[in-house]
Amino acid sequence: MCKQIFEADVDLLREMMSVMAEMLISAEVSAICGADYRERTEERVNSRNGSRQRPWDTRVGTIDLAIPKLRKGSYFPGWLLEPRRRAEQALINVIADSYLVGVSTRRVDKLVKTLGIEGISKSQVSRMAKSLDEMVEAFRNRPLTSGPYT
Image (cartoon, rainbow, N blue to C red):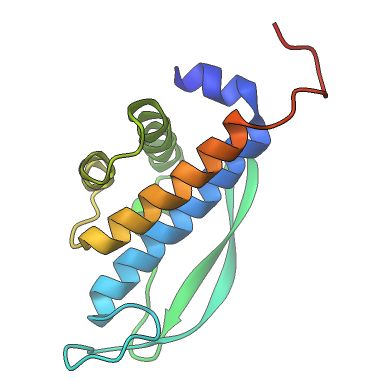
């Protein structure tokens, strides 16, 4: 099924990969900081200080990712950018599986853990699932006026 999604619409897959990767990066940084972006809590140990663009070369094209900077220390998503191919395939599988099973929060949480990311809250998983749900719904309801379809 991943092959069918890949062949159906490369732009959709690229957009889904971009959104999912940035959401996972944001969730990991939130776990490191002890609070979500712009959230004020007593548990906060660090905060974000802007971001830097990092190109991510994938089979669906180059995706520009916004990698957050931290006030104290640094952050680099080694699970995604090194080694590239394995992480790319894992993220494609997460997106394809999410698409196939209807994007449930439990399923997304389980799939994200296969990437090696721990500590994502239920609300973050829910936001990811909602975002993917909206993209899939837009794809399903798109006009079929451009291109030959069987």
